Length: 264
Image (cartoon, rainbow, N blue to C red; front, top):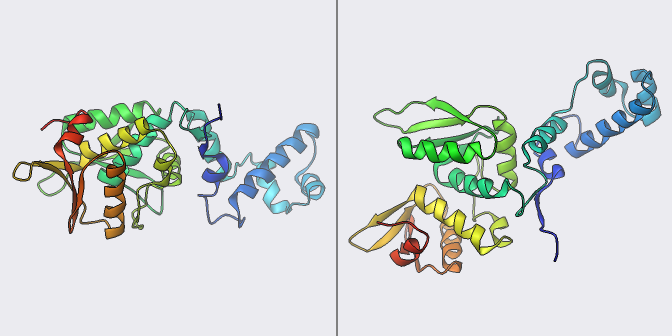
């Protein structure tokens, strides 16, 4: 049996860290590892000696040696590995909750482009409990970011390691708030039907509404492109749903939704 494909690797996560001294942030990870290996063999070597031996700029190496600084991509990888998030495959314990959290992000969430912090809207205690259970299985917690008022739902942010989690979600093609996705995440085409159905069930639980006069469930997506709505409809059709594409929404037959365990 073939090993499951890697969906997110340490390299993928590292390359979400732009704006560093490196054109490719993964190179920072490799250079930092080289420095650690060299100083492990030569514990008394100065920053200048290490830099010269490894052909690296001294100004880059010095903080790593003298100040115990860690490059941001390295720290992010360490955090993700500590939670068991990477390397991520369908067989990973973290994949199930991450798969559902991608659905949360596309239906009730956003990832801030400047900070990579994820935020999720919750409507009532049941929503909050479902989100907390999901995050707890990933080893993180949420905190209240915005309380419910007459015009906007309560919003939850991730308490610790949220930026790393947000970066990981973008590797799975969850969009940041300055992006307009044109399709459902492509990893869904590589995982089992069971995983796709779990994604579909979460999506419907959070975004759909039963319309009695049509006897169908409707997912309204005025904030998504036509291409995205078509891709979403194709995804549900592939799973066996009878789907229809409307101007700002798609609709799905009641029997398919009931088969996922969602009742009117």
